[in-house]
Image (tube, rainbow, N blue to C red):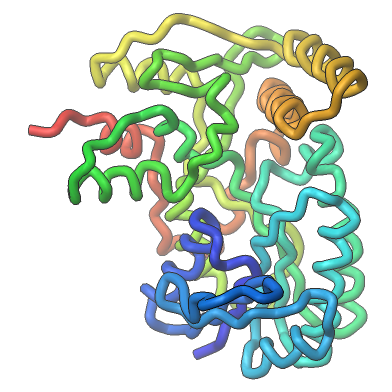
Amino acid sequence: MVRVAVAGGTSPTLGRSIVTAILENGRHDVVILSRKVPDRESAPTEAYGAPIAYVDYSSGPSLTAALQGCQIVISVLKILDPQAMIDTHLALLAACVTAKISRFSPSDWSLGPLSHSQVDLLESRNQLWKSCSELAAEHGIYCADFQNGAFMNYFAQGKKFPNDKEGQAEEAYALGGLKDGMMLKYINLPSQKLIIPLTSDGTPSLITMTLLDDIGKFVAAAIDLPPEQWQGHLSMAGDTFTYEHVYSLMQDQGLVLPHETTTIDQCQTLIDDLDKALTHHFSLETLIEKMVAQMIQVHCRGEIGGGQLQPTLNQLCPEVKSTTIAEYLQRVYRSRT
């Protein structure tokens, strides 16, 4: 049995998924690292069945104390400021050295590594990976990060769930804690909205998406891998499909969607317009809209290592049976009898 620290593990999406999957396996222990908030009263002592250790990421002693007895650190931290994201991870990794952690995973959880140079808000992930992997190598720590593509749960955006116990369970499975509405401009099946990304030759592009709950299962399985396999980019592929396939599957559920598409050039026009808007008036909403447009443009390129992911963890952990898009849509959109 090993003890795993999950930095940022109180999050209702990735944190919840990873912590609960590790505990459900029953082979390992978990502690959640959560940012200490000054003067916070009655802070919870646990989340998702795991204890919470409140830490100061600017304090080496605070981090080192929380990591005592741990062997693996997995980060799902999400910090918008690029330099703060890098500095926080380097501080965490420095504490890992002192606490004699053997394996470390900086936060990624995005499209493939090729996308990092194509999406402004992901660009710092290249430097984050370089800095962490080099420091880890200096101290003999195995370092790997995880990519999962887009969250399959976005296909449940906009769906209304009954306000009863069964409805709450349906919502928990369908959304996996995801409630940011970030992709609603492109995916909103209940409102008959789905825009198909097209490649440069006009064909629907293949896109990798993974269910949030399955991400946790892949990570939990990865803990049992030999340490020497905990290196480099460990991508997972819940399912790889085209949005045109989603249209077909939803027709089987009785929902006929209008036919809409987008191309690399159309995405670029939107990105240029959003850049102009940001120049005149900065807003976080506009910045995120630009990020999403750039991610859709990555999907249009159809590159393996960008919008498509190699099933590296699928091959290393064949015991994990990920949910296909057909299985997911059938379960989320089936009618109650």
